[in-house]
Image (cartoon, rainbow, N blue to C red; front, side, top):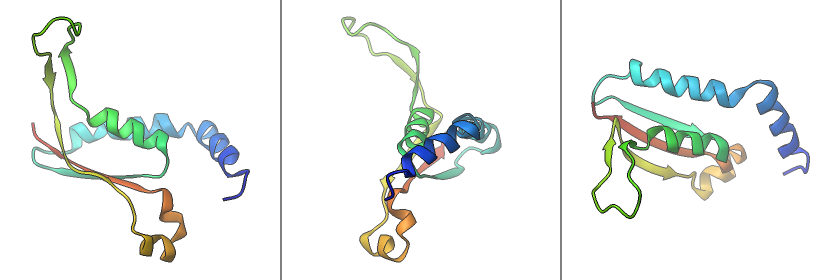
Length: 110
């Protein structure tokens, strides 16, 4: 990897406002996907992957302090059906650009 790759990637992400567009696309999934529908997402860097994980994580309705032993209530809209699948060594040899790809799949449950 060329030393300037990360710098140019950061500039591109900032100038194109890519992370906000990515979040907007994820938010539209909720209304577009029907119950039992499956969404598969491939992210190519850790910023996208973190946004994806947090978006599909169960949302806390009641967030209580850790000292209180009552379970916190969560609202779950999606179920993870494939966690962090990375390309095989053979795939990376055939397609070097795939080396940073992470695939995750989720099913809408409500």
